[in-house]
Length: 413
Image 1 (tube, rainbow, N blue to C red):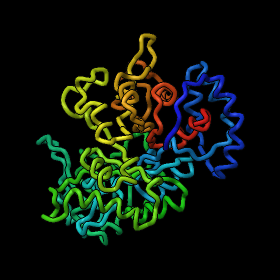
Image 2 (image 1 turned 180 degrees about the vertical axis):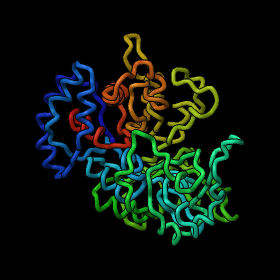
Image 3 (image 1 turned 90 degrees about the vertical axis):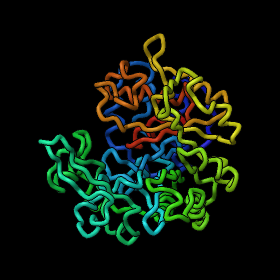
Image 4 (image 1 turned 60 degrees about the vertical axis):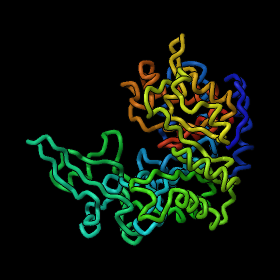
């Protein structure tokens, strides 16, 4: 996932697109983008960017490692399911993500959180398995002002029980008085159209699927929701090693794996103990969640960019908003954070495009530093262009990889 960054002009990009058919033949990819990227393109304000993207709207389109399937394609498919991953690959995602956690019997599985089964699967609709949940379903008490609650973790159940579950769109109705109501609550801009039969996967099964699909792997070692060492003898280091061992057992070359973690200790463990994997391990940057973080003020970043580089970190991955700010001309520009990361020699990946719903109200959390200049859905392409051509990111996680694939193909990434 290494790209040379050149601040090429949009005129040059139009020329580069003329070579796309030859590139597509070389990759021999059968990519289908569907209508959404072109809906975003139609929504984009007139200008050079729209002209450049319009020039390649007829394709051809092919797989790109710039386009990373975040949990698959969860804008419309249940996350971390076989169906979601296949959809992402069909949209040209060159890298797919399995968030890794573990079951009660220490088997590694793909879930965004160790304790999200109550919102991402049908576990509550299976009473015999739901009986194992850490917190059973409790209906909302409107008179007492208490929301409905439940908490079901992979560590509550065995792999055999996990295999009996079906993935669903992430949602919960906190006003529910019944289990059936609670598993609803889907955001209006999402859909249940593809939720029938979402097959959950183990890490090993995801590896086999990704190899079948011809994509690279970016597993994220999720922070455990249970105390570690788990049951007194399963340490964080053993957990980190077990994830890498699963790829080695499947004979997947380290060059095809971008291991991720928010925990710097996991990344430095891989750098020291599994250097072939550690050289392209990705530090998911959680510094924004600690204290008074400001992407424009290096004094609020601890540790510093240079300190991270000195630790052996090669890839850093902050959320979208950290990398941009509003420029003097009222347009998005690279933040001080973005400049400092590149100056320290760090390659940048970012998350997550297409996770914010309609952008007419500013885009919410992921757009918070440019919310007042985010006005329509086409502004997702404006942000993507700044990230690629000015910040110089080497990859973008997306909940709908067709959008990032379309942009990458058009811009010759």
